[in-house]
Amino acid sequence: MGENKDRMLAGEWYIADDEELGAATVRRERLCLAYNTSTDRAERPALLKELLGEVGERVNIRPPFQCDYGEYIRIGAGTFVNFGAVFLDAAPITVGEDVQIGPNVQLLTPTHELDAERRRAGWEKALPITIGDNVWLGGGVIVCPGVTIGAGTVVGAGSVVTKDLPPGVLAVGNPARVIRTLE
Image: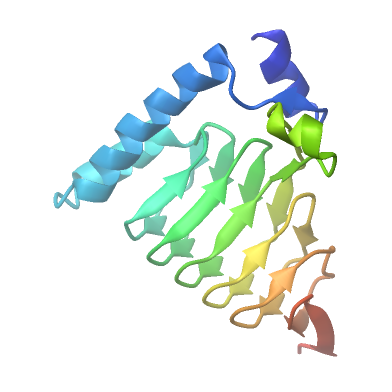
């Protein structure tokens, strides 16, 4: 692995437009295009296994699906991802088992510099996202860098999750706030 990629995966500042990362992007573009245009339901699981770092049994991701690299995404068995998902995996994204992900959900690990000069120069960093088992993310939910969502939690449609959520709660809003505990 190159030094820039090592920094990226360590959650340190790195240059996103780098030759090594660019080669990984070409791989991802090829596999996402093949997955998103395939009408062969038997072919899709094999494409997912090639694209993603780990895919459990009975995972169903409805196209179109987009990601940064794919290889840093792990999805547990029985998980369903609806149309239009965007998983930006400049840091690891771990999705548990039996997770329900609504349409147009975004899991965003990268963050950019606040300093305009460094932002123009291409500096960014990424923090991992972890989604526990049996979580439900409603349509249009955005999960920000570094967030962990505990098992059994439900996040209402259109919510923006900026901080960790504990297990077994209902959270809604922008920013998402816990409104009650679930049985």
